[in-house]
Length: 267
Image 1 (cartoon, one colour):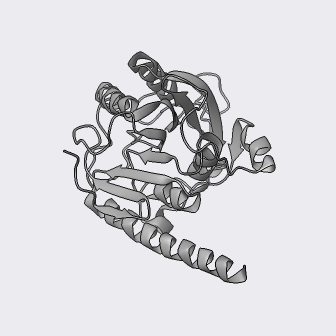
Image 2 (image 1 turned 90 degrees about the vertical axis):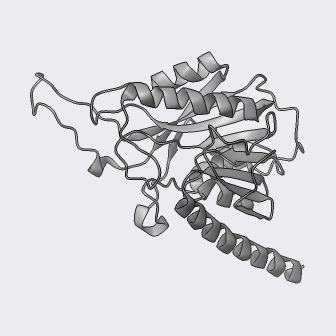
């Protein structure tokens, strides 16, 4: 029996649950997953320890990736926002390691989008200064790995795309440049901007498809689902963040409905 949703309105649902241990998403039911999991870089979350050992982090990653794999349809896609590497507390090839785990689970690799956050000012390179003795190179980018379950060609769904020609031409270029989201404005320690899920949704899914975010956080992915006429499911372990996401969605749904009403009146 599936868990009762924390929030369920206008084709979007929030579950206050642990994605790994709680059954709240049916197998073979998801068209597209978009998520940004914890990075294990000592971010202060309410209900998650972001400072475990790297081995524990990779074990956690394997567990949730396995659950994500089973939730996807055979032609389901997966946009995974993760760091390129890690230097805090030891240098690690995070992107390469996670992609390796995903492949072992069964995911197939399609491509990688490089997200240029333009945050060079807060990405200071340390190590030796003006010397070859021990310089550190830090890239001010994040990665969006594009994976899929079994078949890349999409055969399920409505077949209706809402992406414009200009959007398609711009977004199929694998370097996306837009700024990150404000932690203070959103009220979450690691939000991503709505532009990220909006692009992924329009590029990799049809209108009416079901999109899942297993680490919902402040609810950005579901807000993007409302704006693009997709069904959305978000799973979030922390109840406070579920409340934050619910408030954002309620406000966004009301604004979107008002916009639709105004369009109908104009017709």
